[in-house]
Every structure is written in C-alpha cells, then in structure tokens.
Image 1 (spheres, helix red, strand yellow):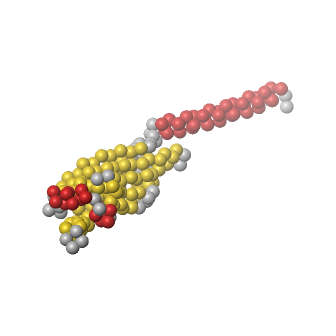
Image 2: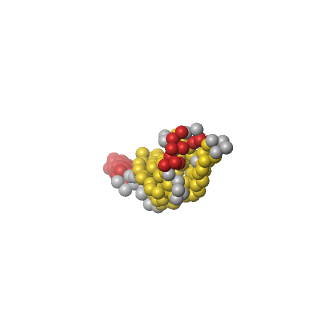
Image 3: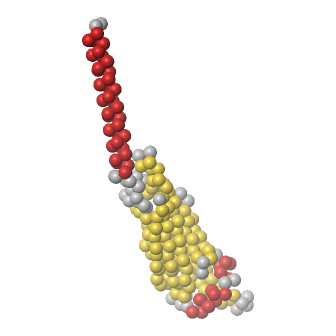
Length: 197
C-alpha cells in the first residue's frame, strides 16, 4: 500500500468520525430543544366541579347535653393533565376542616391520567363527630343554621417525558363550603387551586 492509499484511508476514517459526531450532536440538540419546548412539563390541575351534601343529620341530644352530628360531603373532582406524557399520581387525600381543626378525611386511590387527558374522581368525606362535640362554636353554628367547612385535596404525582425527564408535580385545591342546617344542603362553595412543580 502506498502513501496516498494510507492518507485516503485516514481521511475517510476522519470523515466518518466527524459525520458520526455531527449526527450525535444533532440528535442531542434535537432532544434538548424538544425537552425545552414541546415536552416542557406543565402544571397538572385539580378542580372541584361540585360539592354536595351526601348525608346530614344534626340535632340536640338532651339526655347527654350534646349535639348529634353526622355529615358526609361528596366532592366531584377533575384532575387534568396538559402534558405530552402521562401523569401518575400516588395515594392522595381529601381532608375536611372545621374552624381550622381537621374533622374528616378520605383517601384518593392512586391512578394515571393519559397525556392531555382528564379524570373525574368522586370522593366522600365523612366527619369525625367525636372531634366536633367538644367545640363550643359548633353549638352556636347549629343554632344559627349554617356550618362552614373547608375541604382540601392534595394529589402528588410524576410526569415522565420520554422516560428521561422526570418531574414531580403536586396539585392542591381548597374550598370553603357552607352547609345549611335547615335545608340540609351545601349552599355555596368558594374554591382555590394551585400546583407545585
């Protein structure tokens, strides 16, 4: 083999390495651009569609000098995933508060929301009556005809884009619900939503 043949082989090998390197850099650059633009992780949202009174019983227990109270709130939630990848969420919870004290809780089972999809969840939160009996404000609220509760939901999850980019997202919703004692209905609800990446 002569000198020109060796130079030709080196030149060809160098070109092959440079072309392979350029293709590799192009693919890496393409993934970075897609990851920053198209596959950018957006906040999943949880909205409360409605709050209904599933069950309500209130009355005075004169022999024991107390209040009998049994309340169940039915929350109709929708979790929406605007991402181009599925959103998997773990064990979640809905909590019920009265005057800042937690008086009820319900578990939301784990699940998955497809890319760009939504999932409706119906959650029933029952009040722990024993936690309310000692609250003196409860008696005044029952006599006034309305009870104000706060519900909060927290849904933690993860979005995995192309199996490479994994982002944790937690969605929160909080609602103030007024329960009318005489009509046994949930009169109005004021809700706030937020998400955390």
